[in-house]
Length: 270
Figure 1 (tube, rainbow, N blue to C red):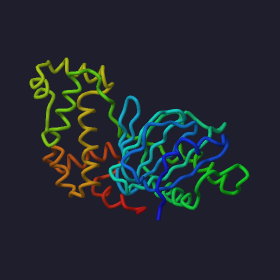
Figure 2: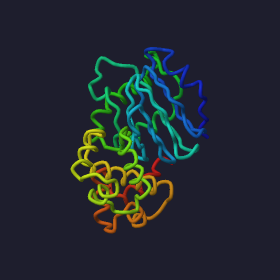
Figure 3: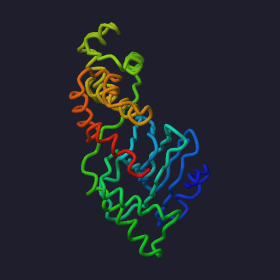
Figure 4: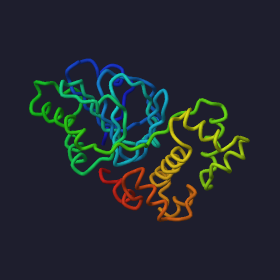
């Protein structure tokens, strides 16, 4: 049985020893983890549900078979789909060998080798000091391998809109996710030209309307596949795709795996 999180753990234990690698595997046990940050960089992998990780400017969607790297000092809160979600965390100090890979927050798919390494760390808990050999060398090698095992970052995040009209537009898209909404329909609905709509998305969110809308639909699809346990065909219809092949191809481009394969694999560690 995994033990539950204790709030003070985030505030008091991770950064107490500058040179240690901190390891923690546990049930969430709560509806969310309040905004916080730590000096050490964080590797976070979850099982048993999906997790939203929120920073000051973006909402990241962490599904099964993926991990997120959170650099040192980044303030974030964690919102699981269920208190039964298991979090597997490794917190690392900065090493001289660190590359630019560790300076940005991103989500990456997890391959079979990385899953084996994650499960190997399940026997550890708390601080691992440089004197704790061979565990420290193994844990350090885990971090050193991440750039090699994480070649394809995935756009499983959406920026927060600030413009009042864009907030309303995004809210409309979320509430009508079953519809296949084009830019002309959206522009007419909100009394704005298609050109102005395109500029608004690019200026405010640094992505096109199509990019934002596609990611929104795929993130919603991921949640439906995991939380609602709908069939792939049902999920496709729920996010506005009448063509299953088109949905499957789009899902593959965003998530890196076919939806049917994703459903088969997401319980690998449960």
